[in-house]
Length: 146
Image (cartoon, rainbow, N blue to C red; front, side, top):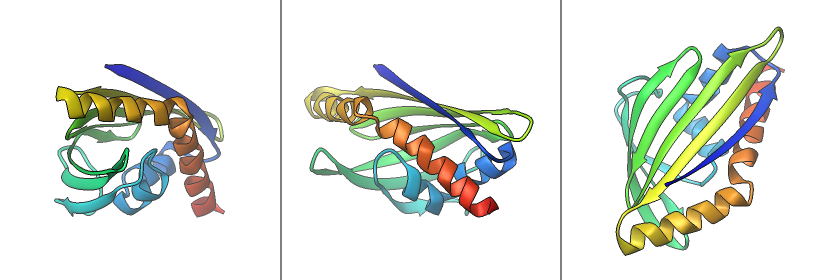
C-alpha cells in the first residue's frame, strides 16, 4: 500500500471547505480521478453515507463502493473499495482567515488486475493528481465565497 499526500491553504473557513468536500457534485469536479455518482443514500457526504461511483482507470471502467467514516467540522475520511482500494482523508486546520487542508490517499490493489490498476493510480498520483485536486478544492471554495 502506498500513501500520497498533498496540502494547500485556502482563503475561507473550514465550514466552507467541508461544504465543498461533502457535496457529491463538487467532488466529481475536483477529485483526483474523474468519476460519476451512480447511487448515494444522502444528498451530502456525512458520517455513515454509502455511495456507488464509477469511472475510468487505466482505460478500464471500474466501480467502487464508498463508505464515509467521518464527515465532521475538521475532517472527511472515507474508503472506496473496488478492484483498487482507496483510504482517503482530508484534514482541515483553521487559521486566522484561512484553512490549511491536508489530503492523504492510500492506494492498494488485490489480485493481478487490482495491483495493475493500483500501479496506474500511483502513477497518476505521482504525477501530481492529488496536488491538483486540492488546488481545485481551493478554487471551488474561493469561487463560492467571492
